[in-house]
Image (cartoon, rainbow, N blue to C red; front, side):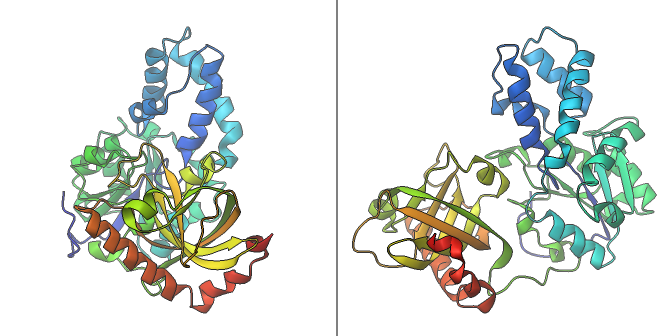
Length: 379
């Protein structure tokens, strides 16, 4: 697996998976399975998701029926599951960076194909809720249009053929192991964007593994670079979260010398799933203290090997006392980098302070500074 920053094999077109790569299908599927299995006295275990990610609908259904010992056949399961899924299809959100990537490649005339293990009709239904997507793809192909779905290379080979491209000229972007294997078997270059956390070790056959689409560098593959980074930061659609500070001046202060003011994650499960792990920045408001610059991490903090995904804001101000229980409101306006592990505590601390410098400088820019006056921060 090559992770260098140098130019890799030149690509002239892009073949993209849909579920888990461009849209967050997994979240909706998990919600439906959680409710569906409860009627049989079963509990959906998120760890089972690894067994169905990237599989064809028939393969995924077979796995669920067999692993949970359901008293129904695969056909019966599908006849009950898919109406529930179709009813929720309009709630499937695009993943961070998906719209940006599609519009960027389309705007530069890069041929694109959408190649999914879903059926063609299912693909068309899903993307109908994402304005403009269908017109951006020269080719759309589902597993019902080829002999075998992924990990067979058939989907990508057929997509390349319809684009009139040699598979070796194609760049595949995939979230699942079957998808990565399919891309490599087709002879394409493959970028893996794992949709399940802490599973990057399974993607060793990919040419590159990235944390999210926000981290994609098209120029590494001979494609037009993004031009939207500002002072080492990427502007994102602002999002807002708030709640009482539940811990701060704890591990961050004692071990790192960095006083984080953490929020409870129980009320923000959807946001935690929706936003990739990484380092972000924005503004923080405390009703009785004011508004401050803020840099924060979302993720598992691999150096400490957290078992849960957390939100850990660092307010860039020297407080003389802690503020447990006080209402903290955040507006997140930009992205700095993906979450990473570090060989030592010292290197981790150095990187965090570097993140602080990047955030402090960026937040003085008008495009970010304007959010300091957002009424949400001082409600």
